Image (cartoon, rainbow, N blue to C red):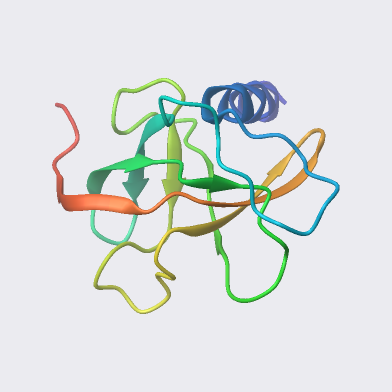
Length: 121
């Protein structure tokens, strides 16, 4: 139960931290400037990647990859996120994410940047 509550709190922080809002229209919107920056832990590689939110409120069409709170905070950042696949992996779709939050499901673009780096010790 405690882990679930932590995951829910991180989900809320994630949405606030990314500046995402649920959009009623089908078009993508650009987040406010400066673009929100986040770090994502890629489980298949054991690496952290810098990222920047480039579009929010994407229409739910095409491939998306699950992005979720990282309750173990592998990369030592707030908010903390993780995903199964990153650049070079089968299953990585270029930073098109789907995230379930307490207020609904969001679809957005947030490409992973660079070659990745080891989590802090």
